[in-house]
Image (cartoon, rainbow, N blue to C red; front, top):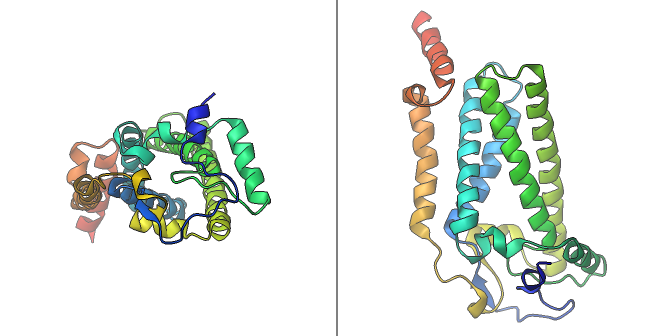
Length: 244
């Protein structure tokens, strides 16, 4: 199962690649999503227990949800290595990759490796639970059990994120390639023929501008007209200012 996908981009363990061979792997929308999604989750986590920062927490939560929806769409329509079909791996492929890490001669995957792919799917799944439960909570739906689901899913996602970061560090050392930097630049070690043809810069820029535009709309209070619960939260904030 998924044999052809498992073999895609996978090098034989221990085979060295020319250090100078680099190719574009991550398109701009994928990179913008990655860092914006990470920042939104981290900041939402940090503001989750503050009543004073509930407005900021909600804004970050809606940003998180919007980015998540974009990634699900981009996973179907994006460039080669952004598509989910490029990193569907069987359990056997995951075990084989982990064993190659333990031997110090890891398999090379130009796109996501099996361990990274598992982390991505877990984060997307948990992210959906976090976003859906958070929006429902903002509508006073579900009661205490929904709050527990929201907090539990967020805690589980944080654990996956920490494991993912540790995995990136380990893989970077073993592969002798800075994987975090590649998610900034878009370039990785590999043959030019294996890279993507288009970085989709326009879509990436539009995505980034959309995030900033949403934040501006939220802060202006206009989001109250078209976002659930924003009316109450933003209205309370402005009412508080009027009383000062």
